[in-house]
Length: 119
Image (cartoon, rainbow, N blue to C red; front, side):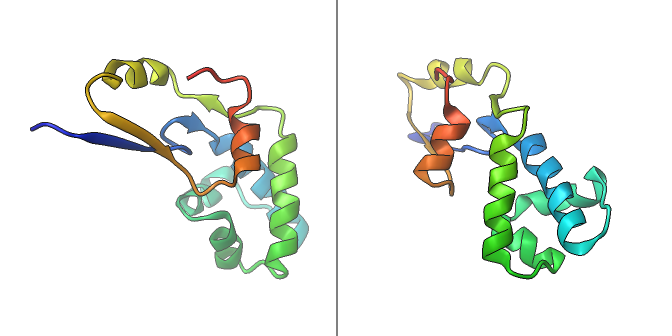
């Protein structure tokens, strides 16, 4: 079987943003719901968009809380990092197929997550 193109999702495929997203979410849940949820309790939510996660958790004032969550994510000390050897994968297929990376991130968030990454 041959392929003409490969499309990669940015989060969770190209870059690891899991910890920098979930630990600030733990903080948001504590602030908004007064509940201490664990990493394991929240990790299954991470397949949804940020707004959907807040909705499913029963957070009120979602746009305001989402904005604060994004600030916490951007300030998180462990920044996004490219998965080990992903740049090799990109370069390996460079002359074989068309490749693209997609994301639901806006340009500003993309720039923050991809700063200083050379792929």
